[in-house]
Image 1 (spheres, rainbow, N blue to C red):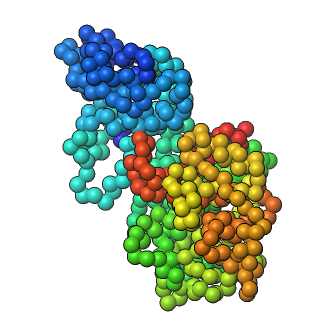
Image 2: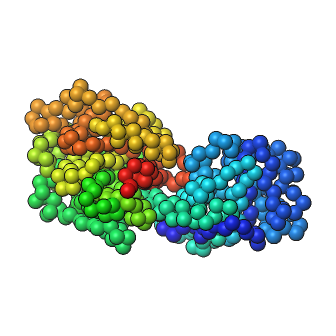
Image 3: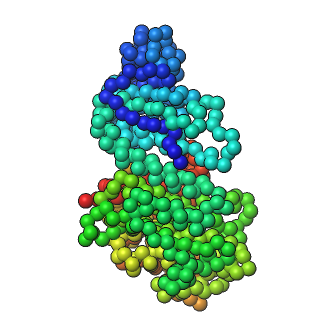
Length: 496
């Protein structure tokens, strides 16, 4: 999806037409500029309105006579000494919402009392791009009377003394924006349009960025012994796929790091069918796979100095006459057997073969899998944290830190022998659900049986990938959760 904005940076700029946006920190004077605001109308308006620069509060001022712009909007930043990276993203998203029908915008970032770094400016630009995202592909009437004309990018100039460095930093933030938007688009797409084959084609498209992509068909997966993954797909007329993406940006000798995503393009629950109410949301049950594709796009677009594997298992779970039954026993690629107690606990069956394949084929430094796996994690954490399960404290700590840096927050959940016993089966090596209690934990215990001693983390993003609370940088049903988080993980810890 094309960005709504054409964003550039300048050290100085004399606004001409459109909207001028000024920033103001709490407790500081309104940031009136003589060339935009002759007569300091902004300062006087702020006094009358008692506008103090509180975070994300705004003041709208009709341009005074002689001003070169049509409107002036002042956006509060909050306390200058408490600003963090995510505040700049939110400010950018809030600014995007204040543009209205303008086709030209000038934003003066250097507010009194605020030191703006190149990263701050790039984050502001990223916030604008993410905050303006909307998915209207299937609407025949597009645009809003309060927005600029659709299809025509709004010219945005961000004015800051750090313009040169900000332009360089924005090459990274632009890549992040593209990855998040790609992930959002995939989750928002209807399942009749985006099946396993079509999803795999989206992965294949990353070759234009230099990613090596192999698509495994049903026949190839059968030869590999992926009966757990294939059992989920057998009720659908749409064939499964396994997409394997490889970005080689590091040294040849460096072992890769790996990300694996659950890609159930639609989940009816199979024979253990879900209730009808809300089932339409199950088009988003591939949010983990969407995040992995978005991440691989970002890493390739910004030329990350790391070797990275991305693997997504793509299936549709349907209740056909050929569908898997509760009580069936399947043999995973690992050789371990699984009793299928509930066909709606299907994501772990897809992931277990993908994890084993990744580990055996690429011998990665670590594996992180993402999945909209359990409703139980939403009962525990709601929609503001994703669940983090890991067998490695260093990896878990780094993931948690990346979550705090990006505000895609994680909360570590327990693993343990007592929980592992809950998935022992009378008839097979394990069963695919441990029952109602500790459902997100027993799902993680199931996955852990397929990673050997490799450092591994499982992110249960059921509450954060879709239908999560909207904010300044996301007004969409699909959030793209995981792309910024994992890009930060790679950038902070695993690039040469």
